[in-house]
Length: 319
Ligand code: ADP
Ligand code: F6P
Image (tube, rainbow, N blue to C red; front, top):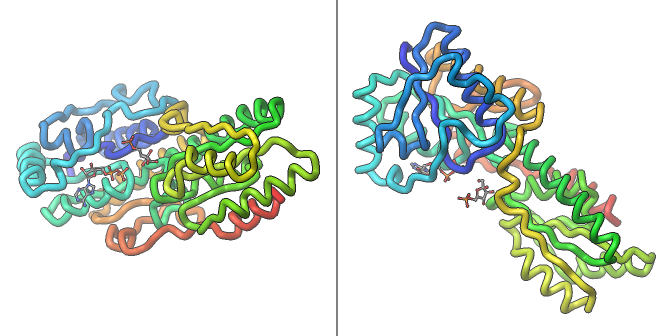
């Protein structure tokens, strides 16, 4: 192992810069040459690479986004695009790659593995939907951002005595909705993992109204329903004033929390250890308190377990 490349791919996540920093500094510590590929798999196809030095990652640990930029790259799904990437990596004599991203990025890493390249994945996605890692980089920050938004919305909801429906990201998973809903004391949390019944949500609101509670916050994960249709339906059923807030991409930005920075530093450093030990075709993750590696195949054949106990607790506490 002499030449290693790092890239960020798919949706960005706060803490990706801390992971890049760890990969760069750990590589240099071990006497490796470390290169940054820009815009994920697109950068392999478009040949965008530069050597990184200790100073290249200075002043980045606290910054959201990714200094290497990221992209979704449909061209890499096709054999022609993949061939271009393989040719480029062979020409550059890259011995190992650290791929920071989500499930899709890991599938791309597997394609590289099958073509003979050594890769290690680092889970970076606000969705937290990667199995065998209790947390992915960016999730904790996104949850804090959503919790802060709930606090603010609750202020105006209380003043105006209205029902607010807030839509959060997460793609097909409800981890952000559940965690932020618990933290923000949401009255109802709607996630794709659980069937939901708007009549039940409404009777919960009515029970609150009978006690004199005229404001509520309902959190909807984007993968479960659209907040707009949930809001319209509730307004129709209850004849009460409803407002809808879609938080959107602000959930992907901002300075990473200390937790995300520490996690990213540990995962990035471990990725280099693994490549140096000759391990490959796996992703690192935080598992039972330790940084562990799991083969891609295991990751692709499992779904991340939903924390049902937390889900039930949230429902009980919001009674
Ligand atoms: P994330 O990594 O956040 O899940 P995406 O699903 O958009 O984000 O994946 C990022 C990129 O990974 C895609 O744009 C594509 O270039 C690559 N990718 C995704 N799935 C595959 C696949 N099955 N085979 C090869 N490359 C893939
Ligand atoms: O995977 C991260 C994520 O933010 C999802 O929560 C969301 O569904 C998606 O990316 C949005 O993607 P884009 O930024 O391409 O619109």
